[in-house]
Image (tube, rainbow, N blue to C red):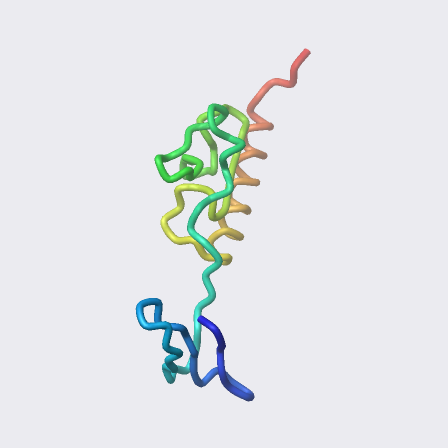
Amino acid sequence: TTEITGDQKVNGLVYKDRASGELKKVELEGVFIQIGLVPNTDWLKGVVELTKHGEIVVDARGQTSVPGVFAAGDVTTVPFKQIIIAAGDGAKAALGAFDHLIRTSAPA
């Protein structure tokens, strides 16, 4: 993609054809911006369970393979990588962490 066109609203997209190098325009009424698919989790290798794609494996409460460690957002195994889903999962993981803390004895 080289350009998103429109004045008051989106009306098209210009892109460079990878094979020919030619610029082409597609008329449309909206775009969805995606910034990437590779989670930034290399630093967690050997710490928590990761999928072969590098996603953090979590349960329904956001709990990872390490008790007391929770994760949320696009770096986890949630099926859809969208900000609204990440925000909801963040709330769910926070509640999961809170539940974990109130059910766990404090260290002596």
